[in-house]
Image 1 (tube, rainbow, N blue to C red):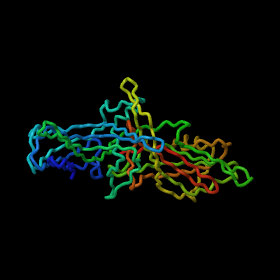
Image 2 (image 1 turned 90 degrees about the vertical axis):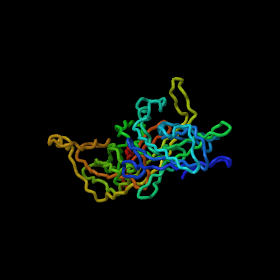
Image 3 (image 1 turned 90 degrees about the horizontal axis):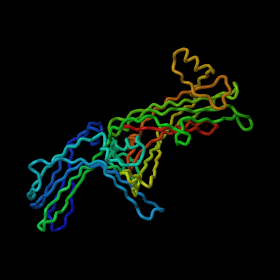
Image 4 (image 1 turned 120 degrees about the horizontal axis):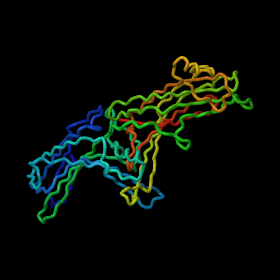
Length: 406
């Protein structure tokens, strides 16, 4: 029950907001684009009350906070990006009188939109970014109630950022002196929108991501080079979050190539392949700077990252395939897909070794990893790290952009 404390001289007004729909996904009380949020507000008063206005709304809001030793005053920035209002039934049109100790039921029915109105974003940014800002962001932060098998999931969102959705009810009650008193209550709604899969990112040399790495190996102290090891992968398809429906697998293929310094050098011994996900939350705070043309930007952008270990695969004993320098030509002649990896910077021709490692990537069931999104105040992005441990040599790590969908 949701109660509002009143002054002793005022009648007590109690609110109960209850849902009658669970969404169309596999997770109870998690709603997505196109789902109906159906329920009712039950209002009870301790004595007769004149009601001058009733408002039931479905509201989406972002909130960020900047604090720390270098910030003398805590700065909080809020933005309401969604506000839908429920029409009130005719027999409850205001003004009206609520009788004492009688329950009044006000139904509501909202449909979760898949897009926001153009006026909900006025950020000064590229057109492609503004388009993303008009997509519904998922519920994140503020202790959202994501659950799996009746266990609350750990949310990697920092306390300084939140995206929340609520059913809000406001009641304006008249007083004998002609003034009005506003009563209100709210209840959270968990939203995981159906966001479209975005095209692969364009990566330049300054990017934090790395899809290919080379490492020169040696035979031992003062024994010269044994060859060059190359690891390479590609950006995978989006992976399901598991917060609305059952999560999906993202098959990631890691290709390893070894270019020997001489035909007498053998491929190195591999040990383990470690995978982890880095969840990064970007949050922007005010004050808001206006361009004078209706566009705004925020003076501060901060980030918070959390790394989550996934799996560790043992690859010791995996068999290498010895390939000739004509492998690509032979595959083309046979009408096969060319799977060759570009040679290393130290390749001088001749035979080389190839190894393909399929890596099943699945998100941990204990984490609330919301879909990738970018909004005016809060954004979430992910990175998949693949670390290949090599015997008697330093590890090689690839950093791959990963998109999570509904």
